[in-house]
Length: 462
Image 1 (tube, helix red, strand yellow):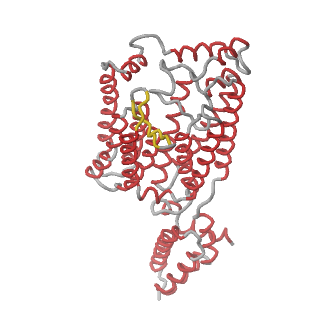
Image 2 (spheres, one colour; image 1 turned 60 degrees about the horizontal axis):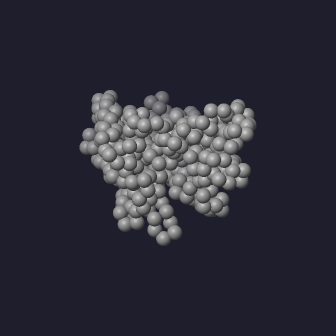
Image 3 (tube, helix red, strand yellow; image 1 turned 135 degrees about the vertical axis):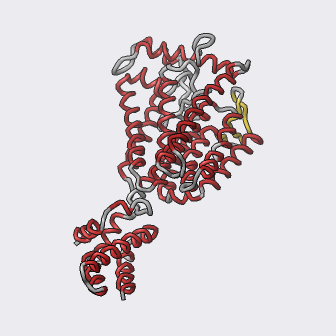
């Protein structure tokens, strides 16, 4: 009798929910609440049948409760975030186009604005596609996707690699050129899926998670691509630290984190020592970056000279405009924007981009779904790293030219095919995390409330 009544109630309730993936966890939780409530009524002296009837009655009409659950536990499009991305995309392209039109000698659109507009359209289309995908499906096959992507990068650079400044970061096949360093950004959210796959295990599972970082790091080290190697390594370390701190692994988390970060500080020192002593292009650039030899690179000197007379609003006058015309490829859109539009305009544009990424990070950290939390955090870390290095290189803080050893890519402000496409793929993942943030999960729904909170949801629906 009990099973029939409760089963019928749950069948009716969950049939009101359009998102099938949420039905199982909602059904499990409400079933547990009903069982608990029946137990309380039995302790008060009710008969089994009366206790079941009262528990079901107190829960509320199954149709109304089901409708209220449907409103909560289904994907909801983050229209505000999508609109913000669209506005930044248009503004960023407009700023680049205006600077290129005003100063034709600048290398903002070296292959034409039409190409950039094409990649922008492709990126936006892929972003929408990924947004409508359930990110948990990507996480479920994170290991397989990582392996396939790594093989493509490795074979691509081995068979079709193009040497630029002593490194093989580019795959040049037919009419397609792919920057593998930028492709490596995708390994970060995929690593979040790998960590999620091994959650619940001990030191063995933790060791397997660490092994999955090695192929990507080895690939970036041997090409070499120091900037993206640092980005991926730091991102992997942050994700691993979050997973350990959240007790995904049955290990002594303080000891593990102390050992990992202690070793992480030694690794860059070892890399620096390894490159400093080399009499090649990379060694010279590392020594220049550290100020161990020579003057700052010529491009850095030009950037510092250009920005020495900038104003809060507007350009710095005839001399600044003359210097700007002679910059060619020695700066970035941010460099040129500060010189031509003023510090305040550039700061407002960068603040708008930072706000978007910070908002995504905030939403990710508040996720009930632990996979969504970690994948969203990984994507946000990638963007924050890129923004930091972009600002440093664009303002002459670093001693080497932008675009070579140190990344000079910024979402919405940088020309390029690979970087643009990868940026919008990561934005699509972040939008997917936002879209599914209210969908019930096995970890999140149980924390949402007691029997009486679910009961009030039914009352609110009425």
